[in-house]
Image (cartoon, rainbow, N blue to C red; front, side):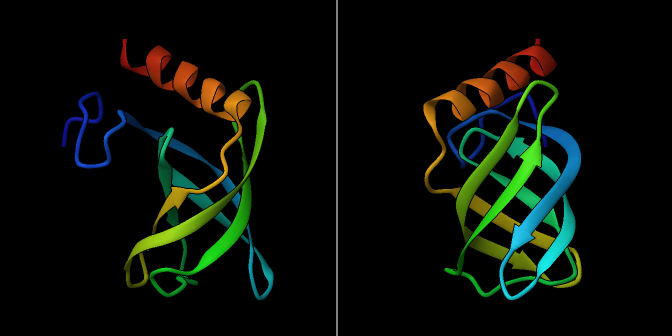
Length: 104
């Protein structure tokens, strides 16, 4: 897949690796490996059912993002694709800036 192009998610996405602190039945440290302004792929052994909602946080070079998300799909023992639900305008701008920087 060409990470610089737009895919079915509607927003360009980039490979981006950072810790993700997922809050659900217990606080677990997982990691993001793919990021767009609409969502992310979280590498985790503790997948949640599709449709589940939870809050998590992660770091960008210039900001910490805390967002609610909905599980869109799971890949057993690999990770979970999530859609952001309440991304602030400031957080969206930070992600968009990082995506533009990494794809230009």
